[in-house]
Image 1 (cartoon, rainbow, N blue to C red):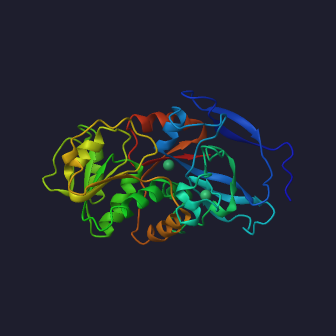
Image 2 (image 1 turned 90 degrees about the horizontal axis):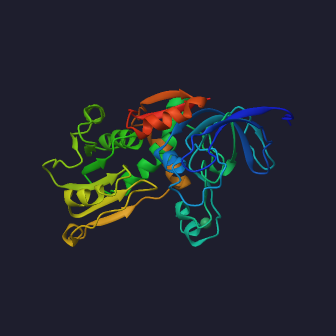
Length: 334
Ligand SMILES: [Zn+2]
Ligand SMILES: [Zn+2]
């Protein structure tokens, strides 16, 4: 067993709501039973990290290391773990479930009453090293290098779960064309569906990007694409998009909110819901989602567009994500 005495690694640590992440040197801990110690080689930045930094999620256990789209290599394993050293692993948002509650028993572990999440309740991947429960780590498709694979682990997985919730929808609107949308659009186009991209006002770069990924239409969130949508997925955290999306879907259509946090939804006339329209959220992911999506991604094939930052530039990456300055996904490279 390797000796970690006196060895340390860098971590970008959140000390409290609204504070910038602070660089710390932390001692490396040996993995406990069921755990794997991973040397992080890439960690993508998600909008959820912004909600965490802004204190918009409940009961944040400060200090915490954000980051839940982790790619790295096993350097040591605890008791009961058969992963070989050096194996490449991906660590997603879902970090622990109880296996006993009604949700776990009904194959809805994403809703587990006692779920714990990477980079929220478990120290995450904005660091040189991370400890993870081996049951929630995944082998990654070989076609992707570490940096390109990182955004698959949340933007890809949660986006894919949202896409699945659209059922057989042919015309799908996407509100907010960031990391998740850029992956979903590729999968949807591969499945022969039509994507309509709704972006911030006058965001020509995002619209060009959406069209380059196969979107049949791209415009502003207040624009009318000229056809009724079968479904819409909202990734942007802006509640006012909900009534707008509801107004664009046909009878029987579904609007899916894919983010963990959203500003309040303004009231809207009942007729926008009438006609068996459905409004729902998608929360977290199951391990089955992960296995399914990681098989599909290389077949599409999904190409991730990334902008890389050093670990110590995490605050810059978060600022750029907040300002809409990232095309595709931001990835930290320790
Ligand atoms: Zn995420
Ligand atoms: Zn459970």
